[in-house]
Amino acid sequence: MPQTAATHTFRHLKTVHILKNLATKPVDLTVEGVLSSERIERYCAQSSEFKLLYGTERVTDDVLQALKELAHEARLVEKMEAMQRGDVVNKIEGYPSESRMVLHTAMRDFFMHPNEGDNAKKAAKAEKKECDKLKDFMAKIDAQGKFTTLIQIGIGGSDLGPRALSVAMHAFRKPGRQVHFISNVDPDDASGILQQIDPKRTLVVVVSKSGTTLETLTNEELVRSRFKQAGCKPEEHFISVTGEKSPMDNPSRYLASFYMWDYIGGRYSVTSMVGAVALTFALGYDQFMNILKGAHEMDRLALNPDIHVNLPLLGAMLGIWNRNFLHYQTVAILPYSQALLRFTAHLQQCNMESNGKRIDKKGNPVDFDTGPVIWGEPGTNGQHSFYQLIHQGTNVVPVEFIGFRESQYQEDLNIQGTTSQEKLLSNLFAQSIALAKGQKNDNPNKVFPGNRPNQILLAKRLDPFTLGALMSYYENKIAFQGFCWNINSFDQEGVQLGKVLANKIIDHFKSKRQGKKSEKFPEAEAMLRHLETL
Ligand code: G6Q
Image 1 (cartoon, rainbow, N blue to C red):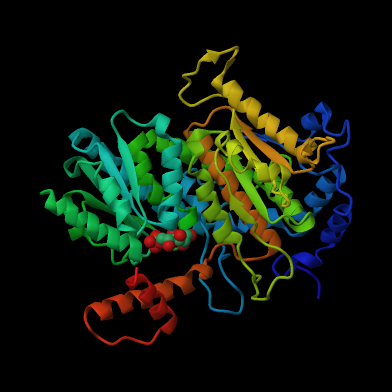
Image 2 (cartoon, protein in one colour):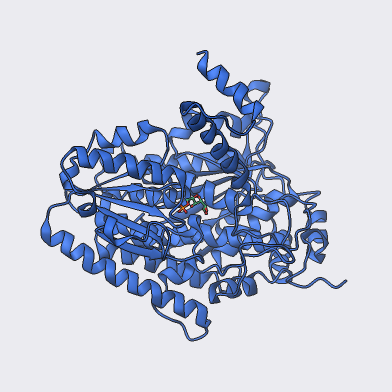
């Protein structure tokens, strides 16, 4: 059967065979002279605010050409167009599945480009309405001057992205504004935050697309009860962000409600109201708009057919080379920026929930590797921790470094001839070169094998626009990889089984407390007995 964009099996694509051959003899970066300044100059792509330096990846012109052809053969840009215009791309053909559009890109598209589909335009219009509502609401909050603090309660996609961006933008906060997050159903999470705040001066935004998530509903009740104890009326402090008509869409319980829709996946929701409320409270509306503008610029780039301009596509194909042809199992994302402290955790969800899949879009098991394990921490801290394994361990870990020319606060000091920012960047470049080139030595313990692939994404300064673009770079890169593997990157069935079992165990706890009999669940009962005998 001829391969089409809709039905292709990754392994049967023509270019896959070319790449397989090329992978039998990838360039050896440890050979004297291979990692030259010309190579670093040459293997660099630049667009928007970013440069992607990939001379330290194990690629040659032939590999790049084949990756470009693979992207073309699998019609990746066409699929990105289909996603962004609002085709139903979140589905598994022939089986019950979410069957939804995927329109997070419309959340930052108030410009309505003429070639966009009606669905995308409708979604952008609906979001514009929410943004206008939010702008008015925040103007009132600012005028009142009552609230200095905001707590966001949510989990997964309703926590990780907003938290990562909020931490990343600390340097741009309005004076006196604090933002906290509560996500874990561990009661210590809420207690730890509640100790730090004054309820009278605190807004609480409860974020749940479904309005039914156990952790979020539990934490909401816990925080509501503490607010009541402190003499505050929750309906004067609590805001909800939820799906229209969800159980949380209840005006009597909230000061205000903002909406999101089923076509916004949780992990892709930070530019919707899910992130908007906390980020606008912390940074102001205009800076939140700058995040959206940066994200939008990268979304537009993701539609460019030229792989040297379309950075997310290039990043995606380099990842496919490492994953499917050099067969590496994990990817470390290592930002040389303290502000990106929580960014890798956000990307971990985005990546692993999207591309941790074992069937294709027709429900057939795949016979190739899909999404790698994603992990990481900011440098230079990581250097004093897990870099040992990356340099000399038995597993090769491709690395994606992220760096910025300037610091955010721009408060730096020249100590012994260099600023801290220069020291930070020197470390980044040193790691990249050391991983690629390695080191020969007579003492085996001092041998660095090298050929450890890595790339550097560089920008001038991590401001709201750049952060929006950086986030969108990764979102689009992940989508391209999913398109290439022909898997559905937009559902998350894999988290269901544990959730269902947890609810059964919760019922056990309840029945025991009430002295009632409950459904038999011997494995869980045995575990609970261990708990009781502690
Ligand atoms: C993300 C997932 C998941 C989700 C949370 C919270 O893509 O769907 O992480 O965001 O389970 O869900 P609610 O927003 O519905 O509470």
